[in-house]
Length: 322
Ligand code: GLU
Image (cartoon, rainbow, N blue to C red; front, side, top):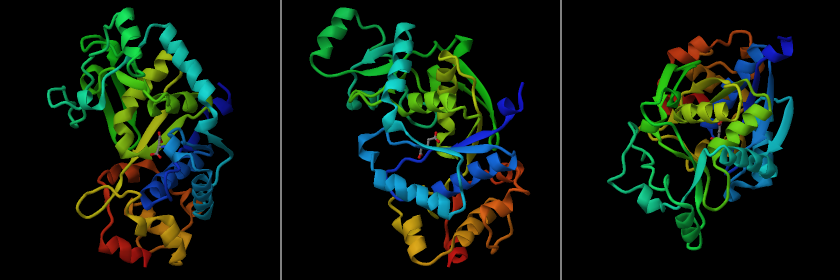
């Protein structure tokens, strides 16, 4: 195996639906440190599949925030909105292998109280449209456009049990039939589903390490399974704690006062933001002003693994940014 095959290749994969907030900045920091500490490279992909998140202006702001934070990349930006043809080919391949089927279920049907639910409360697809005849598909297609679902193996079939080891959260096992059931690879409005796009992109872009927020830990099994069907090797996964409000609510684009635009306007410097985030994850001492490149030498996943709890953005945390 050549050196190139072994080198870590990480990625930033932001969705340009608003200004970058501290939670995204934290994931980006750890993704960058993990790749750079291993002497690896970074790629930038703008995840603008959803027509509501296709603002090039937002993408420019995200890139500007990344650079300002001292988080650089070696390749990209790639835009998912330019890659529809590539996703279509993957969808065709899955369909030709008999692995997908059209699904006509409405949102209300999917979320019905009687639907089976996974351990985290999300509905598991009950397989309602799995066995529709060709004639029935043709009839329903005249009434509404279908979404496309990927068939997952039945619960007893071992190929539907996915195991992996997360760099921070350790060993995981998921039985797809129990945790999600047949899942969407294309929405009924024709937009390819996140799960498919991310798997195709990470593989074709040579990504070896996926670092992102803990909210996506539950997507890994689907992504590993889907990648396997398309003949791709699974990347390494590392998830990082989320930033949450004191009431444990996840920080989001609604917390405008904590987005990079506002913090920059307030005159908070990049080294202060990086230092505050890094200290919260045990990567440096509290109160230090540091730039990412200064943390490369001492970065280790052990620190993240020890701080698995979400990071509470409380008065203390905010005082660090003052
Ligand atoms: N685009 C997703 C986000 O901004 C991240 C997807 C991923 O890292 O797999 O939350």
